[in-house]
Length: 113
Image 1 (spheres, rainbow, N blue to C red):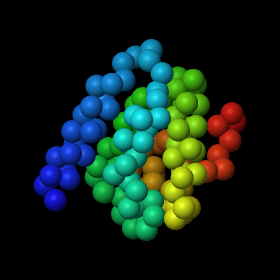
Image 2: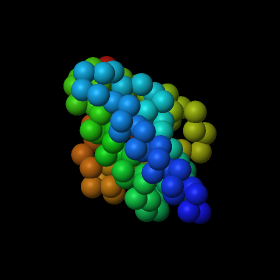
Image 3: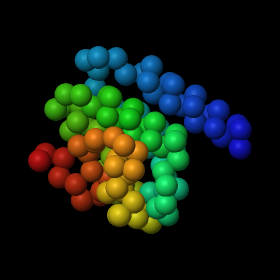
Image 4: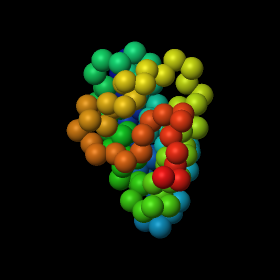
């Protein structure tokens, strides 16, 4: 278990270092940020702290309209690959993490809106 936590922290640290102001967001960064949320997004309940850190990371990366659109598309693509996504859990994730995130977690999101 400790190895999983350490690995997740290392991934989050790498994601934080990969994004510099003015750089575009890529889906690898978004996927890595949301990876700790997969169990919550499938089963609901309470999101783990590493998941909420990932949500905060995405929010911090997506500061410009272009970044938000790119992050939205990445989240949409990731959500479309999850066959057992719990829609209620996905909708409430930012709120449960205490984060305002303008990017819905859904395979049907219109990222141009």
